[in-house]
Image 1 (tube, rainbow, N blue to C red):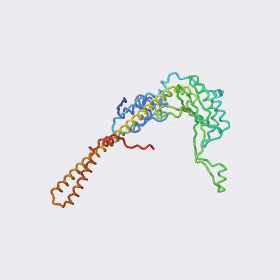
Image 2: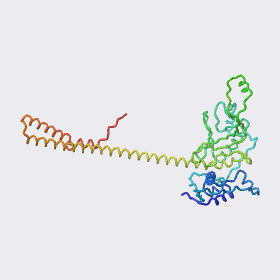
Image 3: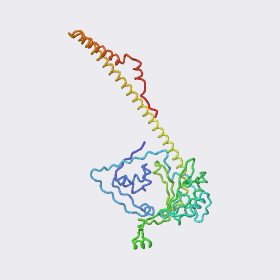
Image 4: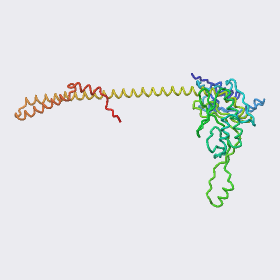
Length: 386
């Protein structure tokens, strides 16, 4: 069951400015992004970049004042905790033992898959942003510039060795489009390293300037991309259910991606467990939907059969009523012919008509042929074989 906590704007304002957002969101059972949205919706200002660093260093940074409530708005704020899922991943503090993974700049590349990756990038070309790409086969687990390639390979080598020390394995098939996978407890986890690129408006090259002067066609991009040297390590292609978890680690001001490898390795079994639970839940959901579809189809068929039989019975009733009406008509004609002064020739013709009507009434009467009634009532509608 999800729980809802209600507090005033002023209470939430005080909590936001006295407790870091991530920690406070954890207390409320929501994400930090979700809590920030609640604050912005209710006009509660949030601490800016560097605020908590100043607090940690003993400074007293200035708070933004809480604006007055607008007419018609409520002072009460309800925060509903997200109901935990069985596949929710633990927080960093709950990961348990985090292995130590060191990456030296002069690390020797020894892991076979990293050696193969290095070989794949010889020779290379560049994509539209300046990242090097292999010319023969693909290596989608690396997208960096030439200047960051060696560092990325060292990170991969250290990561793969650490992964195998945990008893996991790696897989990279030989097909050109194959993707590298980390195999953890039977689950395949995709991983990649990407360099961040900054962009700026395209500066015309001397060749482009010269071609323009000659009134020649010039194709020029809108932007020039510049590699930043900052790398991002990512667990990729996670299902939508895991959208809220941390799945990437980037270079920062105080920590490089190499220092995050231990945390990445520690979270792998939790990701594998979550993937398995999600797959099992999706399969149960698929079976449930399939059962609902079958039940709906069975109900549709039952309704169709009921409607068909109701139509058959309606036809019985119509024929029975018409048969009685025709028989009454035949009897009335005979009675009138006997009591009316008509010539003998006319009388015989009238009686013949009445006799034909009576015979027609017998033919229409469903009670005259029970075999026909049974066939009409029980036989399903004709089904074509094509």
